[in-house]
Image (cartoon, rainbow over all chains, first blue to last red; front, side, top):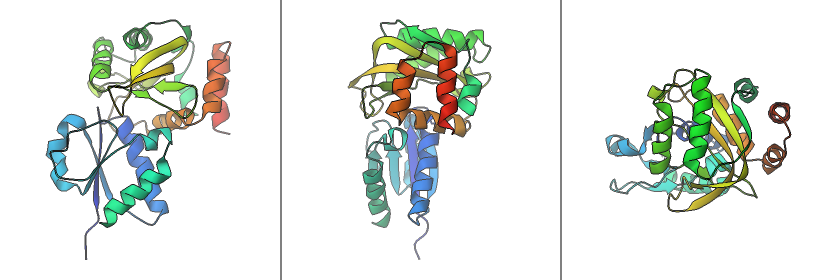
Amino acid sequence: MVGKKRILVVCGTAIATATVVSKALEEALEKRGFSADIRQCKANEISNFAQEADLIVTTTPVANDHDKPIILTLAFITGIGKEEIIEQIIDKLRA
Amino acid sequence: MSLSNYLNESTISLNLDAETSTEVIRHLGEKLFDAGLVKDSFIDAAINRELTFPTGLSLDGDINVAIPHTDVIHVQQSGMAMAILTKPVIFQNMEDPSEAVSVGIVFLMALDQPHAQIEMLQEIAEVLQDQTILQRLMKVKDIQDVINAFVEIKK
């Protein structure tokens, strides 16, 4: 039995956009019957947290040194392309 | 309605005429400083943050928004200041810092703790997802118009 998937939400300062994204992501997943462990961090702290994540969702470009799938999107803030991104995220969580 | 709680004559700038994102942030930062919400380190910190992690958002319509902010250590009390610009000012795109976004409305946010102010942030997200509200904001004549526009959202 596989444990809950872990998503790391990343932004520049991890106080504003990460907060909105985490909440919106949580609600979007719940609506589709998914739940995941969601944590937040700043872009420059990513090395400390990436190991323990299954997927990284970020609002600002980050280097992919961590061998984890990364989705760069503002969809949870702007609403643009939100449905597509949620599908992508769920695909990654199922993988 | 939390956004209208933070917005009043001292935190709203109508018809701000600025050339650069730095100017806008400085102008709004001074309002927050005068209102006692932020420390004197806030303005430079917000300007510098914007240079490394820009906050321009390219939206689904004619009006784009920027949401500058910085670390909690520079903030005394949560709040925000807002500017409606007379002409678009370039902010770099949060999602792609090499890309310029022509911004018409700026929300400078003062957040005193991480992961707090979720309501205020969600309301800002709601506003920027609605071009009708943004169009209305671009046309306001006075502060009361702005406050009314935000009160309308909750209905």
